[in-house]
Length: 242
Ligand SMILES: [Zn+2]
Image (cartoon, rainbow, N blue to C red; front, side, top):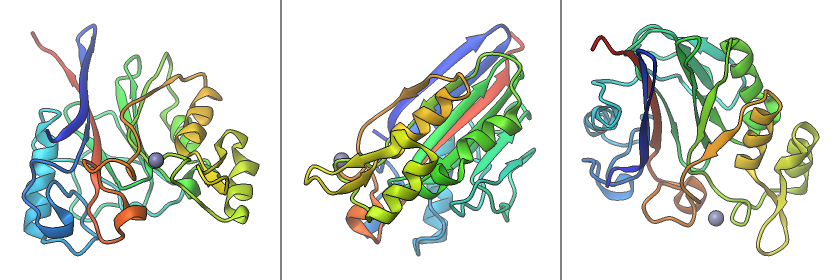
């Protein structure tokens, strides 16, 4: 393993490769075992760098361009891999061959491909990002001129994701579709449903990939383990010179 799922699509002379990683086939130890790509979780930086290269290889790349995720709605355009990534929760590139990635452990990793516009985007969306409208902000900034493809990776499911009534109400005020209840009947957030609804508002049909991070021993879950790693969602576009 190493990936929950990966895919490749071709349109004309452009191709898109995407992947959602799991926690296997990396080099990190202990609670980070083993494919942790998160750099802010007290894991060994050398192991994290190695894991990021492994994750990049799943989309045929050497490295991943990232942002410093802050649970906001800022979007940045990236043209290369930066040592000190800018604070943002969505990134867009029209640099062909540059792989973008977000890192998550319960939040939603969203991958977007705008083939007509020859650009790709990644979004990190937890409940704060959904409430803040990061998905719409990313699609706004993308300004796609044609149909967009979107893949929504594994995240915590509403049955497992208890929150306070205040938090549920705050998110529901922005995205009613995200309001949910846990299996115990307490207030919850369906973050993936919120992202789907925000995509739909832009005419984009998201494809759901994988299941619940909290329930899967193959995935990192912050809510379940607190001290843990992060999995990646990664995407890259290339021009085939066949
Ligand atoms: Zn669950």
